[in-house]
Every structure is written in C-alpha cells, then in structure tokens.
Amino acid sequence: MGRARAKTKKAVTVLPTEATTTTAPPSLSSLLEKAQNLVAQYDYELATRFLQRILERSPTHVAAREMLGIVQLETGEIAAAKNVCGRNNCGYP
Image (cartoon, rainbow, N blue to C red; front, side, top):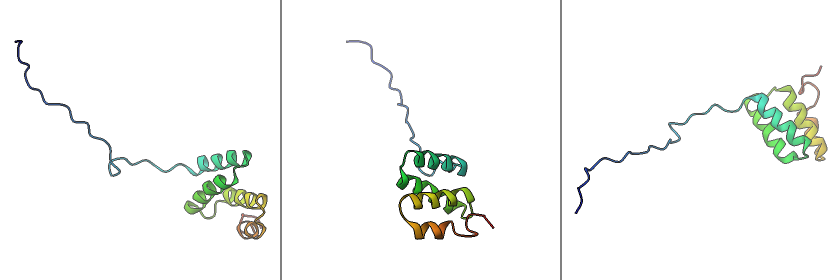
C-alpha cells in the first residue's frame, strides 16, 4: 500500500452576487452612440429603447429627443414625433 496523503482543505470559490457586484450604468454619450449606430442599421425598435434609457436619466437631453423624433418619423409615428420634438422640446426657440 502506498503512503497516505495528508488531508488538505479545498479552496472555496466565492462567486460574486448582485450585492457585491456594482457596475456603473453606461454613460449617456455611449448610449447615444449605440442608438446612432442602430439607426444607421435601420434597427429603429432597439434604437428607441436606447434613446428612452437616455431620456429616463436626462429628460431634457436634446440630442436624444431629436433622434427619437427622427426615429418616430421614420416609423410613421408623426403625432409622437411632434410630441417628442415639438417646439421647445428639442431645445430650439
């Protein structure tokens, strides 16, 4: 018979939980850039989601409001586009 091995404790791997992992939300500029890329790819539905995320965090974000209005025009939502980017909503006098 061979020599008996000494018992050692196994290392315990701790997986990160929701409480221990905190990541900062993406910046508004990165969300806007992603939305611009999606518009260029004609993915208006996903672009709208990104623009809405921007507007949830910054309701007066001029570029996001303007782009959302353009997306709504492209998808035939004329009344919604007027509402989003009507006079004084997009920062124009």
